[in-house]
Length: 369
Image: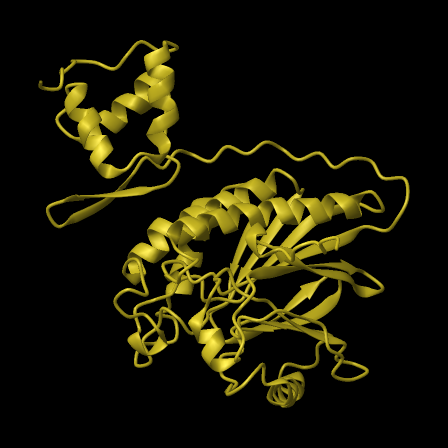
């Protein structure tokens, strides 16, 4: 018995239309083609246009379609943000929140990590950040969020970095456009609705880069370019792109040195002594700083005093679970998390936490008996 073909979409607000709107955002390409034929459209593009114009339905992410050799991005709705109004605070000095992120490795595949888990981890990251910030807002106002991204947002294509058949979902370009870009747009825009100002500082990692290519030919920098192009006209959102390996950020009057840290060799565990030597050298080169922030080692580190002047350095973990790279290099599997901390204008970094990105890796409660 053949599929009945219609010549138009169902009337808005009918049960059929509402069911179609619920299923549409997450439907696969085969399902879209089936709907297009069922409702009498020549292709998925015409069907998507009809869904947008007639039912006001959009796909949740940008999707790529091919027409010959032409690649086009379809169904990217304009971003609409509601204005954040800070609650009145009667006590406490204002602090700045820092979300320290990196090593998302979108496109990487392990036994417990894939593209769907990556998206879920990014959504859980938002929930965890707001849980912590809400608790601290009971004591003092937090109006500004600084996002420090230390790079390696995608897995890349280099087989010497583990990007071999079966270990990656798609190529570097698709990792950037189909996975990392929609997830970061969603996260930044969601956070903007909770803060008066969101400032994003992006640094390059070592993944998504050919060793013979120019330093600026990195997938991380391409991702930041797209974020800047998409969000540059949004009030209260700033995207800063740092092309060099490391740079100084002024946050609340304190100097933070940020780098991916991939230039420091690692054999077993985080190379603390090598990092100590490198930070002291960079301290002189960059004119001094109070804090250092990095990534690369897929293991969280929430503070270690280097000297009386260089107070602490922080390393964020990764979004990847069951990471074979961390197991081989550090001899321990990565525990997925990111970092969040608060900065006071006089006291510097006052609090710091690992941010849960996957609730499956929370420690189990002690069992009675």
